[in-house]
Image (cartoon, rainbow, N blue to C red; front, side, top):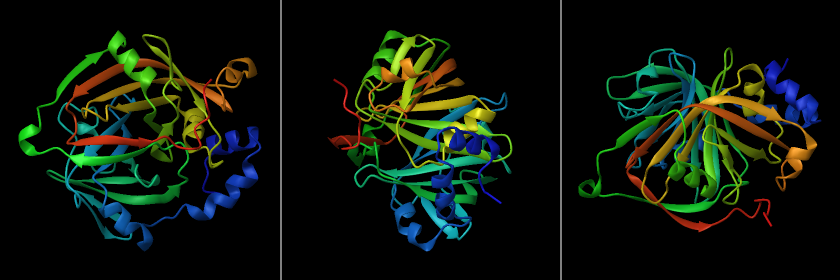
Length: 301
């Protein structure tokens, strides 16, 4: 018996990672281990993933003062805030919804995933954990955060489009980090991280992006979900201004050796065709200072 679904197993077998993934199974816990509590409660933001009513996957960011996340018990995480009303997941936070969380400390390159079911509150919500596990520190760029004072915060402005404008394309071309939401119809939602040197995500046109998939933990949670459900959501954060760019669309896993070879360090590629883009200015209360790149980033010449 395995905890991996058929999509994950398919990718594990195709890449020769099945034995490695099997060894990783005991790292995926059904509860919030005590060793994770301090880490969770010290974080000022998290990335959440789910799907909207039409079934589109989205990744969103939530920020708060340290302490806005509280571990209630071994299966329950309380989050004392909600996405903004203009966020595509605002109306999705209902009882029983599948939700994936990613907590990441850029300064220490530590990250934790919590996937489970949502319990709705009035101005907050809880997540009933189903899977809890940490990931390796690779491809995380080190940054330090600061909280913007109340009087310096501006109201978010949200713009929606079906095609990326030139400023948004340039944002993506320069990005060294993004987050990805995926969804399996039976196993639920998942949020993950991708990183590399600026330029690792290529903009093919106003609706098409492609990025390399580097060597990872061998579990293939994201790509396994894509095998069963190609819909995915991407989240780019402007670490200087707090703005966000949220994208949703349909993915294709690219295995062709000639295309993959054009991306140094790539083992395969993912291409996404966008359905919708949401750009938000001043979306968060955090600003980030860049420290250094991950030593694991494949070098672009």
